[in-house]
Structure formats: C-alpha cells, structure tokens
Length: 214
Image 1 (tube, rainbow, N blue to C red):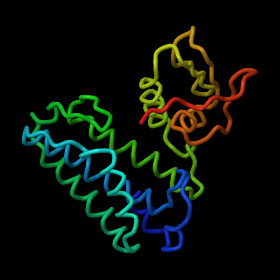
Image 2: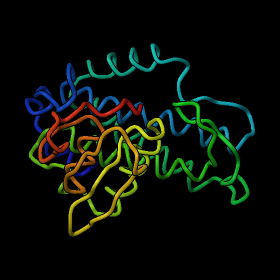
Image 3: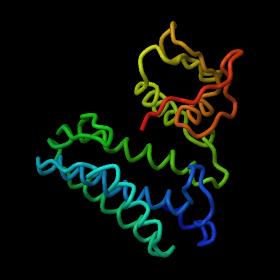
Image 4: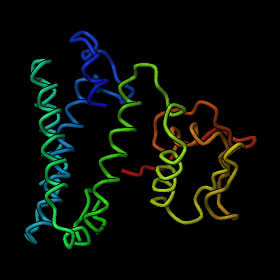
C-alpha cells in the first residue's frame, strides 16, 4: 500500500474513491488516522492504561475530513510516518502484552494481537476503495476468507446464508436463513462489505443490501 500510494499523482488523489462522498484523499487520510487509532490500542496493551481508538465517531470523522485537506505531499508523509510509528510500537510491545485485552472501534474486546489483523484488513479493503482498477479479485484468498468470515459473523443470526462458488466452494450461515446470497469469494466479500453487487445473485429475488457491519 505504501509503495502504491507513492505512484498516485496529486490529481489522482483528488479522484473519486469507491466510498460515497469520499475522494482518494479521504481514503488515504482514513488509513493514516487508522494507524494512529490502532497505535492507541497498542499503547493501551503496553501500559495497561485505557486508550480507546477514537474519542467518538464524530471526532473520528472530523479528523479524517481535516486530514484529507492536507497538501498531497503532506498527506503522503503523514501516511508513511504513522504507519512507521505503528510498526515501531508493535516491535516494542513486550511478549506478555500481546494477550492484553483492548477494545476495538465497535466495542468488541480482543487481545492486542488482533490489532495486526485489524490494520491488515483496513489496508487491503481500502486499497480496493482507492478505485484504481484493483478489485476484490486481486486480494489473496486467505484475506478474502477471513474478511468475509468477520463480516458475516457480525450479522444477526439466521439473517443470510452465503454460498461461495467454486473453486472455493463453501457456505457460511444457517440453513434456515431468510436469504441465500451466492457468488464468488471475491464478489461476496465485496458485497458483504457494502462495496458492490457485481456477480451476486439471490435466487429469484433482487439482491439485498448487505447488513451494516462497521
């Protein structure tokens, strides 16, 4: 992601992302702020002093909007510096602290080791959101499986059953779910995260909107 960001011109950064109302600038700003937020959880694990990811949803949104206004080179520099700071915090975290409990942005209590996956998922999914031609089919199969499992696991029980087509054929969800949604692993991950309905079917019914997960 870091190397790819440096290939985007200043004009490219002003282009539309796949997220409604956000330019690519907003996506990069969010990723920079996310590194800061995840770093707060690592600090919490290291010190034992509660340090939430975000003070509030409103503060999170304000920080992203303000960061997106930075000059292009300043925005790139902030992304790189916050990513490096987060990496340093991980490397400095004592072994015993990786099991310390912290609370993610949605309120779920997880071990500090989960921050590695939280950051990885943000980088991959928002890399697609940059809208530069790489879709979910460019993501590794392991990444897609874990992301889809995370998303589906956040939905109400018996709401939707997912049927993943070959070559990664599997099902996720209850047999008595109200809706059965089918597609490739990549397309289902894109749909489940609210990005696209491409390649998705729901029997004879219109494809529903995926339940909110974040």
